Image (cartoon, rainbow, N blue to C red; front, side):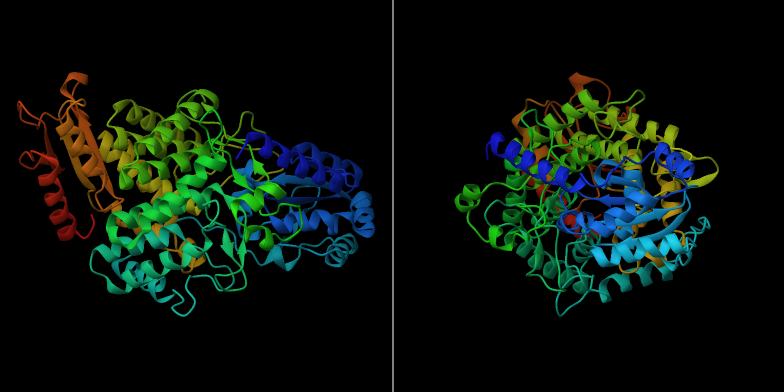
Length: 593
């Protein structure tokens, strides 16, 4: 793909959206919008959209061009439009409602209505008029339960077993997936099933294999990459947008599956996704763009277009790529590329991960180890950016053996403690943003689970009690009963985090010169270990003291590797073949741990 094609597609879509917006005076989300509403006795309506979203485009071309809607919005509403990818705080708050999500506020910032998905012109006009006639909060707001504080009590063994049973039994064995309407791969649920399968859980094994088989139907056969989901309750009506979260999740999961079941072709699926990332979403500087649109022509369904081969598609044009380069999305890509590099032995993929990390460090860093979301943020900082990059640095430490990445991961954890802590309350807020028109930021479930997993593994690598405390606090918030009820069947991440905080990772340390072929072969073998819960380290005595200052390795005249736990290590393992045999036995005995 040429950069000219991408830029042309960007210009076409931008012009179309500008035409749709001409009749409505859209503003960004800000306190100023609410000040205007108070001064002019108006309401605030927010269109929380995604630039890649088909139904957002349809609303632009229909609802927001309707004369009655335009008149109502112009007379009594301050109109706010937000790209949810650009504002993680708003996206987290309304993640159950989009995209598009339509939220109406009183001038004091209190909510009147929350609506999910596409609203046709008649529905929108009716809603706008009803609010003018009676601005009392509707059932979409009043029926929402307020967040309850975490109890501090961890789920019992029975509760954990119930979550596991809910996850496995809730899988749709006839069609596949956990959602009735939208079919997609939930990365945390599938990762949990992969780990359970490695312990001999036949039900989880069947779920994981079925999910991986079905999800391959959403991989674009011409360009690679994964469509976001399939609609209509089946696997043959894809929504064609390709967003970074979906690419990164699928690349990581198929890489893990390839390590566990190397003969099943999952490595090929991972390679298709990695190819798409490089061909379509990698910038010339090595950072990664955010997404590719579902539509070639905004608002027109593109099933016929995506049925074409590469050359036929290019002759018609290329769907727009969102060229924002967010720290969070780059961190997701880096973690996934590290997983793929280890599983496939692809050093080029690791090089791409390093280039992206270097770019984010140069262009998105904040003092103290944190990260901006974009080049300039209207709010924030946001937890997701620093968490994502911290996880990326930890993955790079394990993938390269370079201790500088571990230092950066520790700095990210320190920034999170300093900026997102909630005093005596457990958990870490999703944003450091406080404004008159936005309530106090709260933790977000998926971020909290990811933070617990990151900080726990970081604590094993760093030896710092503060990292383990960070993990415990994040997990304590995520384990509250209200969160468990709200998650329904999507409990895989919480099960993984809870399990990891109670056990030690598979820990491999290679001791030897980094220019030694024997050391290199052992380190590469360790990368193939069939579990995501692992800590792989490489100590070259010429580079400084051992990890955590532990003087537990004998002074040998040749490279060796060690399996370590609880401050002690195995006898020296002399080469990669011997390490492969030991890893197979240890993983089988410990069930992937």
